[in-house]
Image (cartoon, rainbow over all chains, first blue to last red; front, side, top):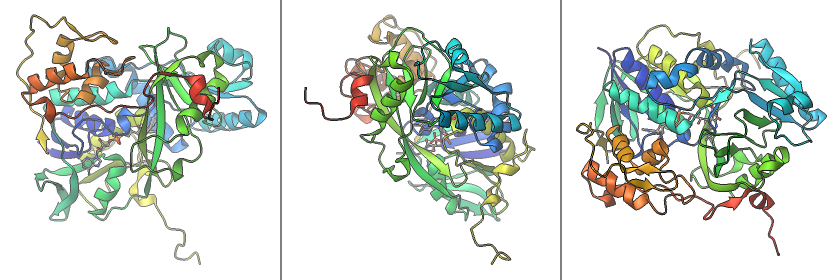
Length: 377
Length: 106
Ligand SMILES: Cc1cc2nc3c(=O)[nH]c(=O)nc-3n(C[C@H](O)[C@H](O)[C@H](O)COP(=O)(O)OP(=O)(O)OC[C@H]3O[C@@H](n4cnc5c(N)ncnc54)[C@H](O)[C@@H]3O)c2cc1C
């Protein structure tokens, strides 16, 4: 029986652990926090979105939406609140619509069914839109799920399959034996050894992987969200705007979850998970601009999370040739929730030396190249 | 501190399991105890798993009670457990007001 050490108990580490155990591996998950899933996985917008994603990500995310998400509640034995009611991305101006048409073109090129809808059809899909909405892109197979529950459901199911979880275990280095990465050392000095190591530690993977000579170009980016009080069911689509000034959805229990971008993200301090003074206000303006009916809803809570933004904004899902024994899943660049189940499946297959369910060429570690290349000068 | 998450003994119901602990979200003591036996070993996980402490009062009323239940099931002291984070806004606030951002002399 193969023995795999997983670093990180976010949605992706937990999903990897679950699929590894399901394939018969013995698994130990090491998490630095005192709590399971306290990273991006419990702080995200819950979007299970294919539209508007990098074309390279379409095959895995579409695979997940076709083959994993619809049955995930049954698979994990609890309701993870997956809701597949489509994604409307809204525009008000000609400039917005141009952006949306480009997204539709990219999607079609990648085989994803998506189209433009006019003002009337957008309002048919979601009657609560502002009169200012001129049109939208529409992807009927997009949706959302509850990230808190997905992360914990994979954890719970993995535990039931016998996976061991250790919290408070910050892994500080990867260790090789006969040139294979088979063990890790924690901050307390404990050594955990197996037949291979799977790193799914978000931005924290960067520093750790460098101890084995693997250097994934990632930057931490602080993103913020808010949740409102409950309101009666209004609409269940995932919503967004052409300029990404807001996105969000109404959850099963009635609250709305909204996030957005204000444009200063790369320049905010991500070392502390404290919100900035501008994000929530900016998001509210974005929301009210498209949904004036929501303006009196009360905000209960705001929070921040960190993205592991990769140089080319797509993840690394690979066994780097430089480090046999090591499996890497990081750099999900803000798209890792919708990808989590399929990423866990693929990473488990890589870690066990099998062939992955999908080609992973676009996610290889060796794709990064510095500007000046030999023969180029 | 490295903590190996153990498997607790089987969940046995107790006479007061039907008692509501989180009034905002109507979460009972039995649901909380069952979730702990399912592996939710921190206040944060319990909140995320059951929504206890996630309603209008944000746990101001029930967090101490939840902590006491968790401590008892895990056989540790409440003070050994991490709190959940308090988050802005301190009181629920309308979206239009948050959207204003500017100083309001009214
Ligand atoms: C505000 C926000 C909104 C988002 N919205 C969406 C969305 O709508 N849709 C979508 O698909 N994605 C979204 N994302 C992205 C998504 O949340 C992430 O891509 C995804 O959660 C990544 O999962 P993960 O398991 O890799 O990372 P994480 O959840 O961050 O887990 C990594 C874990 O590794 C642990 N760790 C780190 N270093 C170490 C170490 N050295 N030793 C041990 N443990 C370690 C961390 O403590 C953490 O628990 C959003 C992210 C944010 C922040």
